[in-house]
Length: 130
Image (cartoon, rainbow, N blue to C red):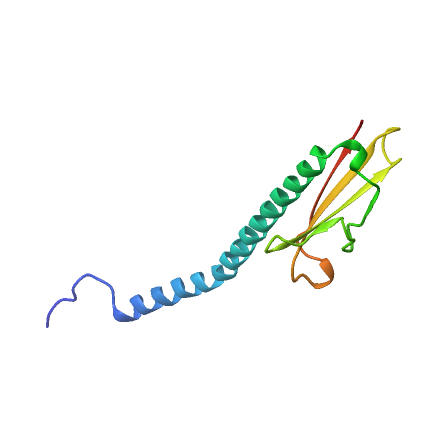
């Protein structure tokens, strides 16, 4: 009879592979959660840049041409832009909210295709004085 050689048996190798497979399957939802979080962060970042661009455009306008109106919750003629491929941009201009003689400008990016406008919305506001 031969003495047994040192090493692992087939049963030990299969058991080790089973334990590794269970560990990987247990961690799989975590990878999906991280990927979803990264995608959400990218959407928020893109929405923020779109809002900031529109806010800067409105800040460049002459103060007298900024007329009160608009809505952040609905498309109002002259106060929204849907030219962006993934966001609808809405803004509202209001007087009397901040310091006397100032106008408050609020801009919101709403993802297109979001049910009822919910989702990853980004809103920024500024106060503009004469």
